[in-house]
Image (tube, rainbow, N blue to C red; front, side, top):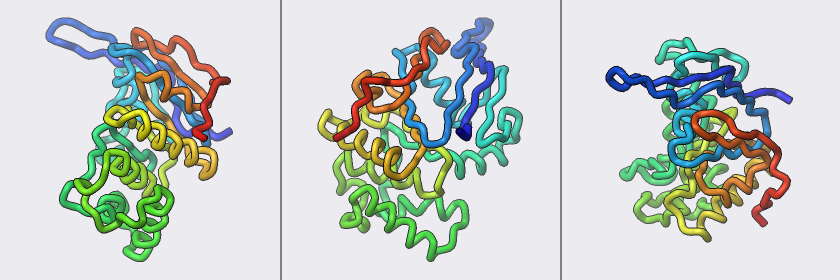
Length: 235
């Protein structure tokens, strides 16, 4: 099974004045192609730190990070930004849509940044809008959509450059339980029907149950990493 992301003995130590704070320690983790993984932990567990390192938004103090087999721990930011933009699709709790751009333009934005042709952009955006069941809202602005619809747009945008992995940071944090169910069903479908590699970072145990594998962080370390035999299928 191909490894999409690997963290090898990763540590993250922050210096606050003269005090050192170890936010992550001895993190060894592999995410394989076509996996659906939930990373869970309470506040202060190191979840946010590990998320930033997984998404190449931050680099470890020591240890190595591999993305699609390439070590990225020592790359310059200019190259790292391009690799990050094409290899990882991000979905955030706050949606992070551009309010003045319509849905088509929001989904198309990463492809324009990475210089896709206009014909490819048009075809891909309409395909993704259909996938997330928003083809009828393609000309609407984000403020005209519900929270769940905005998150669906964010998921479509995350998929637009065909990344190796979708990394979702508390994707249901601003949604009610019914809408959260719909979003997690979409992630389940992307994994099962589209073969996407999905990593959801969450503090909610119910949300983690949609994943086929759960990694728990506690005090900056992995406390367990195991298959989820009680997985919810989203049906």
